[in-house]
Length: 389
Image (tube, rainbow, N blue to C red; front, side, top):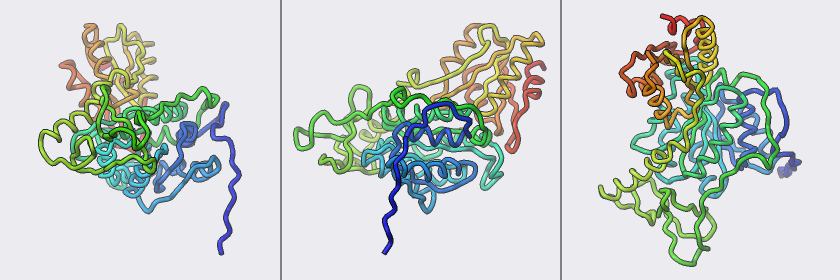
């Protein structure tokens, strides 16, 4: 007979200053955000997130399960979320590809989940231990159909912590899948991370039914004015039917075009109409800039340095970093263009031009691209060269 293993509980939030790996900061943020379940499968360069939670999560009263693959991982975290717990998984590009069908299911069921994708160079197995940023469009459009998601892109271990907290709150507020789109450099970088006291960590609660089970009529997909329906949890006594099929407000299949149009537009609009509230963007020196460099993740660190070097040489350069890549910060870029002083954009990224497409569709100005398919950083000097050319 197998003896039960007793795990001594420890502090959920490691308040204080730490010298911490980006992946570990992401894991600690999930704990601080109140995650109760992690289901995942190890894959470089995200494995340190899973390893950290395998050690820490049972010691704070949570559940950790190594699943058989990434398909099952998302299925498991959907189930845990439906049962009422904040749930989480982490992966990299090949695993992210396998998750796409169930990500679409989560969007259709309106189940809040959070997925960290620590990007590496692809396609296929690619360069498992080297940096890439080519999952950008996959994060937005990877599962078939139309739906709304939010994607945060950290550029430091501190942001790996802060934005993972934000991701859980956004997922619960809008009942959507939310991604923390890291990259190998950010995930494996070690820097100072400050974790605040537990009572200072923001926590957004899910919207819940207004009446107890059995009293009144509960329609699980009847949305309020904010387009988000209250969420009952499995086992509470409410009658809930959940299906990936197009469904009506009762949750029952309704296979016709008018119902589909109403449902899918709401899935998209609850993000689209709240984009200004959701979007995060950093700007430096754009007020008088003639060249604006647009970059995200680890590449933004090179871009920030490049802009400083260009300024030192007398060129009016500015820096714009989408912290939320989806929704894309269109308002910020349009404002810079309308100011009338900008002459060109420069978009460096470790892929062959995914972010650049978003900038190009907003402007007729020149958009210079600096691309590397993966395996190495784009240097500040390379960006300076393009700014000054």
